[in-house]
Length: 329
Ligand code: TRP
Image 1: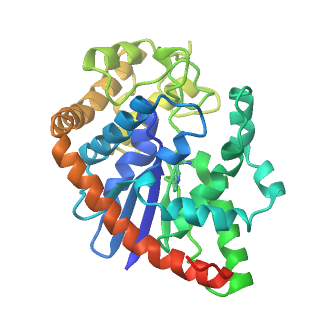
Image 2: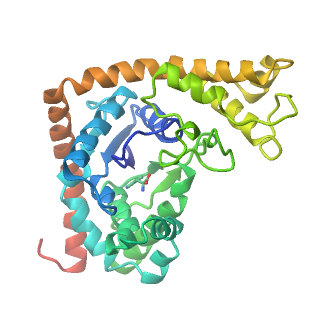
């Protein structure tokens, strides 16, 4: 049996970037010979200040979204991080086996310090260690993530290898699984930037929950260029290339076929076709999401059973780790 683990922050409204780069792939990885752990990482979320009620609500909404995106809570363990204490417990032991130097080189840490200069807390610094604990608790083979998480996967591997060398084989050394395309969906307003829900210009990103009207409007306003030709050339035509990438990923068309299909057509046509492809795929996801949110009893059952399945596996690893380092536990 192979194990898959991934985590998602319960933060606000995920975008097309999150959908293509992560959520959609997560459901595709569910298979006969693989068991998947999908975790809403609320403990990572509190590295920046949160409103308590809003955080609780968003964690549940994220669970609903994952189910709406095709994660089957019977096939996979779908759970909320803070409900499995082993994550915090392993994180402490791993902190004692991680160097300040390697943590201070993390680019996400540096970025977050720049963004939240008034709250540079120790949790922000040890964030990658908690993430390593998430992954290593489940003897994970494969970690599907977007490209921005590559460095975090590397440090999780380094920590696992170091621990195994010091104490004997304890952890499986995980591999990142980064999609060829979709790790990066770019902003519709500034295609040099990654699409982000924290973009101050809401026309830059499409949220998974945007209504069809809003999706169409945002694509119509997407920045392109003035040469008028539809071809894939990310360097010289980043806006058009981003639209083409989104189009291929929502239609499962090859880039060649897509470019051929748009030959001789205008940007206006490309924009409405992309918008339609996105709307067609997101509409059922949105409907299912709304239906699930009306069924809190079901969502509660899902997270309880997810947490207890996860805890069983996690506690086995934690027990072995405590034994290695001499803790009673
Ligand atoms: N850091 C990840 C992100 O911001 C979320 C995350 C936390 C995660 N723990 C994880 C992803 C473990 C993969 C595996 O997207």
